[in-house]
Amino acid sequence: MSSIVRTGSGLPRGERTLNPFAIVDGAAGLITFVEEVFDGEERVAARTPLPSGSLIHAEVALGDSVLLVADRQPGWPVMPALLQVYVHDARQVLDRATARGAVVVTKVTPFYGGEDLARMRDPWGNFWWLYAPAQGAGAVPSWEGGSAYVFDSLDTALRARTG
Image 1 (cartoon, one colour):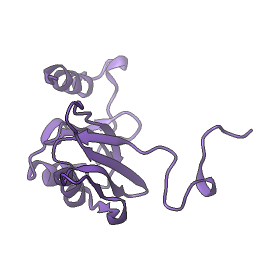
Image 2 (cartoon, rainbow, N blue to C red):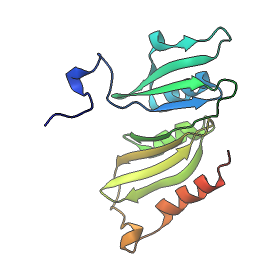
Image 3 (cartoon, rainbow, N blue to C red):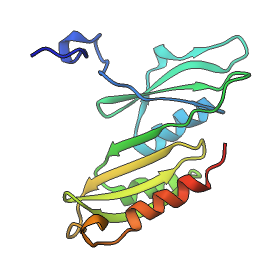
Image 4 (cartoon, rainbow, N blue to C red):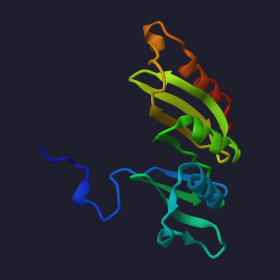
């Protein structure tokens, strides 16, 4: 059965089926953050500044995915992204991110399915879910009688967000 979405060889070279987009104040700073925290690489040829110098489009490759970013324009709302990233070491990523102004939302926690989970909010308001290979025993999810921390930490951070 064929799919309505394009994949693999049906895409332009280097592209992916789904690419998240964030509209923020200070897109160039977000690009630097992603480069320094995740070893991302900006696709320099995609950088499209307006005459004002603000970015209307930019792309940062992250592993086999691409994050699209732009500066908020007059009258536009900031549109932060919710992003899930598979990493090798969630603690290392959190350390790199907090050194650059991110806030830990969920500390590294054993998670259902044999992964460790951590979350952070970057200085632009994007929330990042970090999944890494489990360092210890997997957690029992709260719906099976385990800790509610994984849900509660996110719930608290999202409820505290304004605008």
